[in-house]
Length: 226
Image 1 (tube, rainbow, N blue to C red):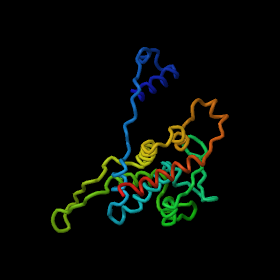
Image 2: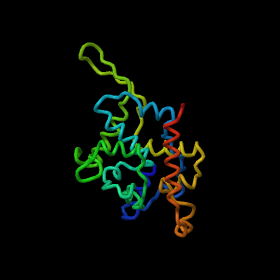
Image 3: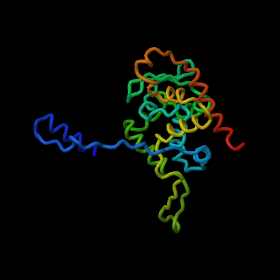
Image 4: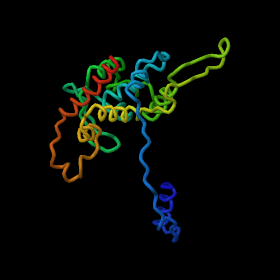
């Protein structure tokens, strides 16, 4: 309905039509569907003995989680680690991010060093859209694999058939909230507005709180069930 309204708005602005069916029609806002893994599910996914060609995609998912839900386009375009941190301007919002690279993230980065960028995604794929498509497709196929007959048809039973890299961002936020990280710190970590925009201008955010929150989230997962 939002797409239809946009078409009518454009037609109205272009004076193609004079009637406007959305004049008294209100589109209800709906809460975003939850797209997060429980701590137990995240560990199952992280440690799953996936097929060899799927390992790079599973690593990319976990790296996204360790970097507080970084978007795939920004992950592909990272250039360097400076003073133990990655610093980048998010493609979607142009907001500046600075994230401490924890050892778990560094271990993955070391396995996939790139030539022009920090990571090698764009060395292997035409562009980030191509990579993002392949990444999500392979994540959704991770799970039990059976063959019918000798060299027969593959039958897959995915662990999480709807999973995408965006789940890593939701999962980080959900776990952070679960272990008592303040909502304001979670908002800062995710790059959301802190209170009203005017107030945000005057607040000098302490990134050490975000660093501590990320370490607590990772430690919680590492020690979960032990």
